[in-house]
Length: 474
Image (cartoon, rainbow, N blue to C red; front, side, top):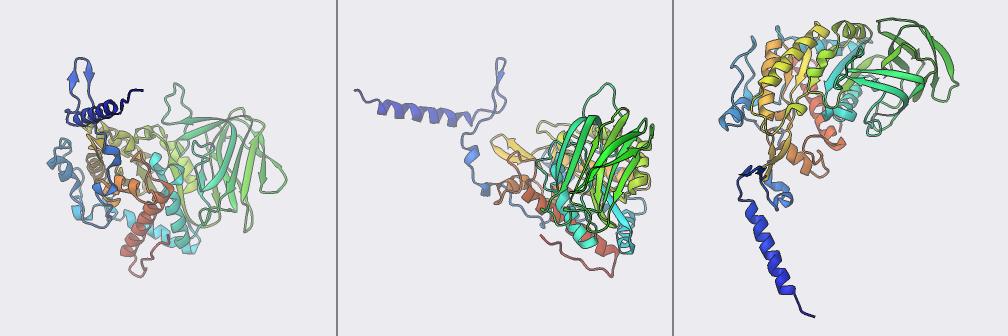
């Protein structure tokens, strides 16, 4: 038999030379109707040390200067939007920037926190996108602050969830529901609840919540509430832990938000279920699991939320919810769904968020509102992994809009390390971010949750001279 080993090796060598040569082909080179993409056969085996190190405490560059000087994007924002000047760029990501008119937004929030020792409850509503889906980051932040400030229970929970099996906060099962969301295009939209969802039950629809021990304060609760609207009185069945099923009636509340509540003595329950044999004219909007006074952080994450869909929340309905919840701080964290590598102008997104910010103020008048900027996001820029070109521009725009509307602002992009930080998080051992270079892992959520907890404690210490900064436990 003839030996073809030499021809095979020669063919392999020519193939390698050909693929290597493709790396020198200019990106987007057009050949007729075809457009070539940049290619590098060695890009996926580059060492993690080739990317920017994850350094949270170093002085970061001025965001606006970074994208304008490097001609990443045109500088489309005005130099000054609001009455207060921006903070020094060396503080980006290290402080909560207070652009409220009297610069007392944080002070009012921490005054509420101090009232917990007198038996009060403090609530934070966190509107986010998939970055905090499944209670990543938010769960660790909640757990740390409940350890320091009091409170037990996860707080607000949805009726259905796309990530129920992914959560470590609680065990969640449901059956027989139609879910409506502000991010879904519908001809006939229902009235949405405070988390941007509405849940319509079929006959015999059910929900089951069970505590989980991954976090220190979510295993049990003494109070269970669910929020609803009903065009007529309806009977339903509830059951706590190992107790017998009980019947109760929901009172009619056409066009109004009502709450049904169950309470128990300490230590409370670790599981609760409800079932709805009758459903005509009934809509649910979520539930809340709590245990007395303390701190509660409600996660209203919506996958695909760029911020704009929140304009579908009705201010009158939000105020009805707030009569039950009494929120002390509203957080908005969006931007991932607007970032792309082909983004050349952010004016459209600036206009969208401008309207959203004004709408949030109408929904939550007199509440401090904290804008958390988009974090780092990366993909291949040519042959290298790098921060997407739209990220720093959107951060700068979100800061300026926060100044315009008199909001609080936190620069998450620089807080997590600035350009290249998401790549480094994804290459960390253990992995702190997924290889989509967009989302955190549960381990990364611990890191970012601790960052936010330390940030809140340091800011509180500035406004409470007698208090000490307590390092959050990992």
